[in-house]
Amino acid sequence: MSIPKPGSRVRGSTSGSPINALLDLLGRRWALGILWNLGDGAATFRDLQQRCGNISPSILCSRLKDLRDADIVERTLDGYALTERGQALHAIVVPLGAWSAVWSEEIFQYSKPGMKEKMLAKAEGVRELDAITDIASPPREIDET
Image 1 (cartoon, rainbow, N blue to C red):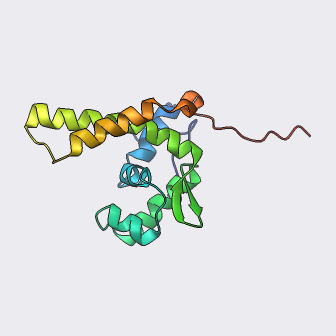
Image 2: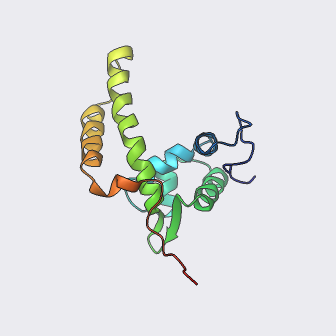
């Protein structure tokens, strides 16, 4: 299966809008979990598999391929890591994690010990990043020939 691409029909939309293509990609099983867990740093395949709650190797392999094709994840000497674009996307997702911790506690009276504080601290750290000014387009070399 190929990754959803802006300008083409994607699951749930015939418009081909970029947001629908992104939501289709991130809505695939374990895509957000991989993005979230790589936010903690690079990981080998096995380490990432454990971080993701022992995801099946075939699903992990498939999602890593999708995320690599979308320039969100890359293979490094340390294993798999977020690209600049992936780091920018992770920075957008982190506040959702903080929101979810508060929501879970307020609406469902469920609080995982330390989760709310961890998410709020992580979200605060993201707000302080100056590099997130152009999140959609990390710098690229331009060939002027």
